[in-house]
Image (tube, rainbow, N blue to C red; front, side):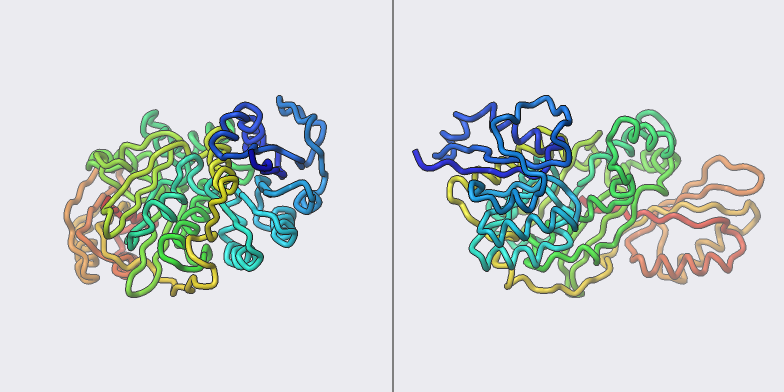
Length: 428
């Protein structure tokens, strides 16, 4: 049998420990499938004494991930520390300089520095693999770079943050407010140390930027993702959307148009009978659309020890088999810098606003929408107090620019109180 593939694992949190468990549990299976043994030479983490419920005694220990990356007995540097700068970036660059291949679960690092790292790796004849950085255990990177390589990808769409999907489905199932479910999710450990990474859509936007690069042959451009989290979604929005046959999801959508690359991560309404509408709990789902394949749907766990470690091991197995691929599916130097475009593809919108309860209020709102070229499909009014009435409007297809024009006119009507909420209704 061939020489073993030797790993250096930087980071012994949930994912790092999961990788060690797989290597220890499936030694014979991995060797049979890869055609060579998979071994661990050394590991690195912040604390040597932390109880991780796993035997690490056979592995060398490094306190510095850069030193781990440079070790002569490491063939593949496995980076599962996290963070877009500092030790993760330094150690990844050191690994490439030392002639190592890299497998990473670090979406933030690659979304921000992916182009430079890919160019450096490819110039050195090395590979960077990152299946675990996007949608956990779902093999979406492999699907785009391999299975769908013969397609002109037209749209990438999906629910890419399980914590947000848990919050939204829990709000609906239990009839609880956003604040109550946020606190519950935080106590259960479902949210990042900085919860804004989850509920603000940042984590999911990192993933969308990576998938956009592969799908459309463009340089990773996280800064151009239109970003809106779920913090403004109320239990009333969820109930009223359900009443009209929709579910609310934090949805990532990317598509290349004549105006440029549209990338947005924002709450959207989707039909409750669609695959995305039926998605519950912490599960992820990615929808890929291409000219030859039409549409495929990938569904699975988006986080956790087992699923994420499984994705890391899939990349390691490819390297062990000698299957080498460019980072984003084509040489990094050929990736074009796309012009960032604000979402302009027309779509229906759900609008929620509070109207002062006086004669002619609805007529003034309808007039403002009409002046902006927006036609109304459906309108509903729910129970109200003496001061204001909640009104819901579903528009025919329109643009965000037209909505903003109408909202500006609302301010002059004297009948709209507070800020109206607009949520795009996405065709799936």
